[in-house]
Image 1 (tube, chains in turn purple, orange):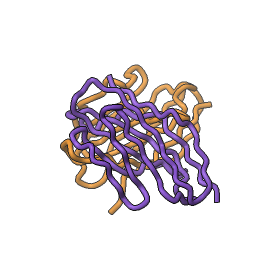
Image 2 (cartoon, rainbow over the protein chains, first blue to last red; image 1 turned 90 degrees about the vertical axis):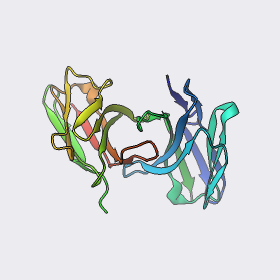
Image 3 (cartoon, helix red, strand yellow; image 1 turned 180 degrees about the vertical axis):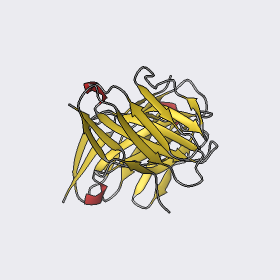
Image 4 (cartoon, chains in turn blue, orange; image 1 turned 45 degrees about the vertical axis):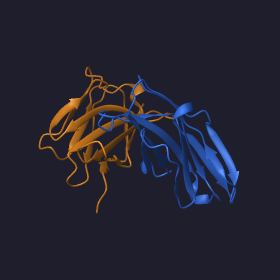
Length: 115
Length: 114
């Protein structure tokens, strides 16, 4: 069984602050993929990153960075110098290798960036 | 390149009426998914197609829900009859075949059953 927990339901930050969104997962599979998606008010889910369980290297893309720690089953997402356009609901998701993109999503974290 | 297109964007129906949602995936994407997103929740998979074959429909409530992807391109999801609890956003996604691909989502259809 797969489970993704995003304990932070809502977060508000002031523009230019850094913010970290937490994601903890449970799976019995030894190999799997982890994802982050952004859902702006328009409704579509925008892909941000995919990370496979073999690769624990942290990743940085512009103002975004991801910290994958297999030992604590966490895949946290940090936005540096937040902007108003970052306001959205962010979902962490998991699919086992061989799961063919059948994504198991967390309940999401609503981020509000206040100007 | 066009993304995943869904229609309608919004639908309001009375309970016990039928409703259908349409999805056109990204060109060349063999795999198509329908997800259900309840308010304040993450999406949950209803059905996955590989070309025209439904390869995973274990989460689809088959007593009232049906889906088809006749020519392996666009797809229709139907509910008959709709119940109040079906009010949600229905998301369609598509991807290329294989493990190392990401799914691209449409904007969804927001269904309200009154």
